[in-house]
Amino acid sequence: MATVQENLLDWLRDAHAMEQQAENMLKAQAERLENYPDLKRRIEQHLEETLGQQKLLETCISRLGSSPSTLKDIGGKLMAFGQAVGGMTMSDEVVKGAMSGYVFENVEIAMYTVLTETARLAGDSETQQVCEQILPQEIAMADWLKEHLPQITAAFLQRSANPDVQAKR
Image 1 (cartoon, rainbow, N blue to C red):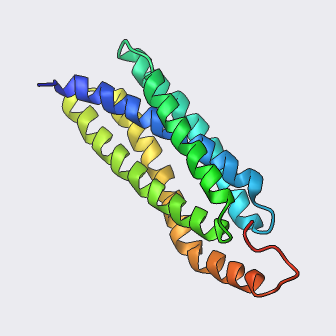
Image 2 (cartoon, helix red, strand yellow):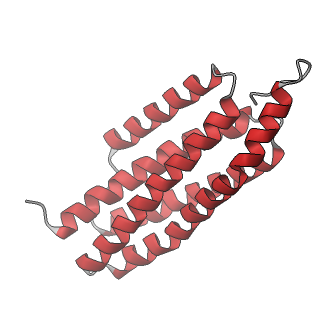
């Protein structure tokens, strides 16, 4: 059986891999968006937050005497690459990307909720504070996407109805 501290370290590595995946997904999405400036701006803002989150997680992992899991990080990057390539082929790429982003943010919210409690139970107040700092950023992004999904959808449908404009990006 694993100790609370062992689970904490393992889940911190999972979170780091997840943030690596998020970085790649967000970069790919932002690079491809052409006709949705508000979404692009918010994705770029969250990309900056994601890079900061990775550094915070690396600090926690290092303080616990370990390093991020190369295997998990590579797996996350490969998953993000697959999602980016798959999204490029869809005619409704922007809508599906926003939906996927919303789902991914909620997985991150669950991860940081679990990590906050695990760090508390492990007596690791520094990691707990880091997770409590990251969690509201993930909630804010999920809330933004949820609030803007109707607008993104409407804009896509309006653009899609016009054969002279590109809707997918």
